[in-house]
Length: 273
Image 1 (cartoon, helix red, strand yellow):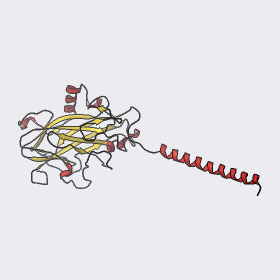
Image 2 (cartoon, one colour; image 1 turned 45 degrees about the vertical axis):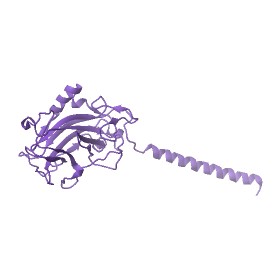
Image 3 (cartoon, one colour; image 1 turned 90 degrees about the vertical axis):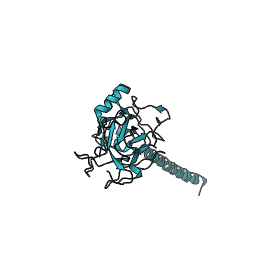
Image 4 (cartoon, rainbow, N blue to C red; image 1 turned 180 degrees about the vertical axis):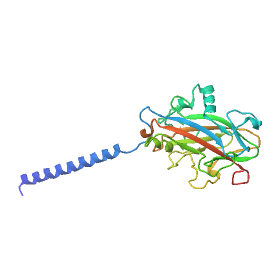
């Protein structure tokens, strides 16, 4: 083989190898461009449409936006949008429909930051939703989140129509329900965080979901305890977890509907009563 022929063959092999490398690099870039990342990248956010708290047992457990001491008759079985709007007007000069949920994150359920670590306050123009309420009971009990609402007599009806986080926004905006978190922070107990449609753990925060089948009560969905006729302040927070894989541009401009149902379980029993 002549020296000229040898070099010509080597040039052809190098050109072919170079084309292969370029082709593989393009495929790799395409693969990266179709990946899904958490956190919004443009400023059109999700909002809260409706928010309601409901007590699922009779006269044993009640709630109010204000502390009425041990006067049980001044507490009620439900906190409505109107009550929350009054609270927000008084304390933040806005209503629920003004609350914009901007992706935030937290490691303890109390302190929240934006993606790059900047501290964020509740009920700002773009942040997370927070309010305080007071629970009271006519006996010592554990309070749980439940998916079974109450009938007209205040007893659980066994139907899956209690706690529900939903949206009337179409897909893929409807994935907003998978990115939200709701936590409950009482004065003297640890924060408990509800994650609807719970997926893989994405932050240091421990979360729980309600069971898929028959409702059961245990440590996982116990929120706090009450002493007889002693009101307890509970801070409720709703946010979009920026680290959640579903918290991407697809869920922008979605609306959330939130209904929380609570049940009281007497000390020493494992069923509502």
